[in-house]
Picture 1 (spheres, rainbow, N blue to C red):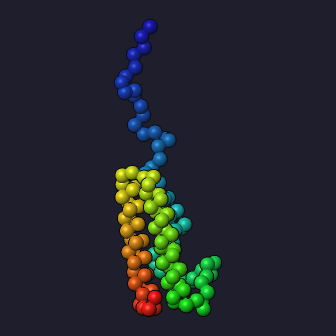
Picture 2 (spheres, rainbow, N blue to C red):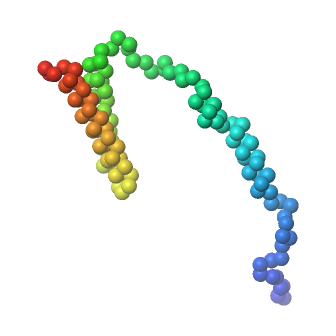
Length: 119
């Protein structure tokens, strides 16, 4: 026996289970306003630096610069190691980051040369 069914099936145009989009939007806005501080609130909050990682206040400028150069060199090596395992856009992005690191390292080395030109 063949049962006739309309294609698409007849449905009630207004379902009691469909949410009202305006109500959902208003609820979402109220939730975001409650849980997310505004830009004005963020800017009004005074910045308190974290003391979790501190640098010896008696460290010399030269010591800090040397540490900076060594850190940049280490990061550059890590980036180049990762580049070997990537292809396409990710590889190009990482090479761009590597170039920025290299420029920062060159700048830090120039700064060191100006601190102690005899070296």
